[in-house]
Length: 137
Length: 137
Image 1 (cartoon, rainbow over the protein chains, first blue to last red):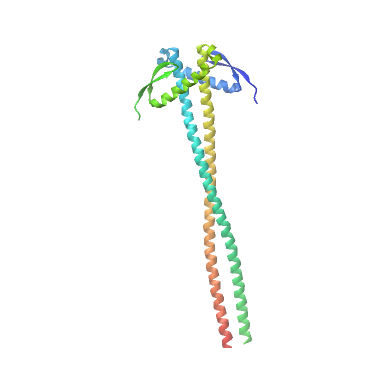
Image 2 (cartoon, chains in turn brown, yellow; image 1 turned 45 degrees about the vertical axis):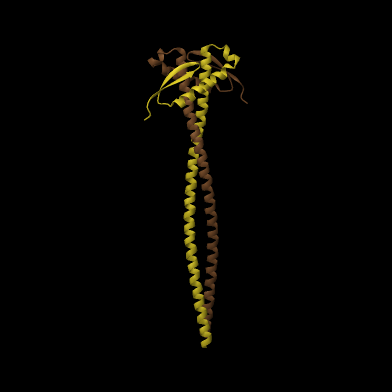
């Protein structure tokens, strides 16, 4: 288990100490993401005119929107993984059937080749006997 | 194209009018999610003691954390879909090869059966001739 650690981050110019199991690197990434959004919003004159509550609500809505869109993508991908798993299951089953057919066919080929070999021997035996008969009469 | 619409939402007790292409239903879902988090935080005495900036920073970090965790899941699932696509490609290729082998083997079985048939006819022909020879001498 990872030890609990304290990480100092800056959010919107204020310093906070976060205590938890997340890595310093991860928490800085998350903080940077939030600060990046705030910096982006500050370029918008309409945002600057809003009161602090409204600015925060916009930011919260924006991040939550990204979360929901990403969640939708993740859910769709999860369904896709399930679908591909079913396809793989079916096609593996088909492959096994096809391989078994092939094994049966290969056995049948060997059996037919042996049979042909026996017929050829029988033909030679009959031809030899006929030659002998021709010679003896 | 969907028409731009105005939706009234309540975030943390304040009413905002959001203008955009998102559906009312979606925006209410996103707002509910934020309000749910705020309600959850309010049960925590440590949160209540924080100033407003710190409370908002906690909330932003929490939503952004969910976003990053979901993004990680989506990225992993995307890689999994790619991996399964490669597996499907390979196994389909194997299946085609196996089917072609089977077709070749089936042709070979028909050829060998015809050959056996010809040998049998030849044997009967030779046996008939031998019987004829026996009878004539």
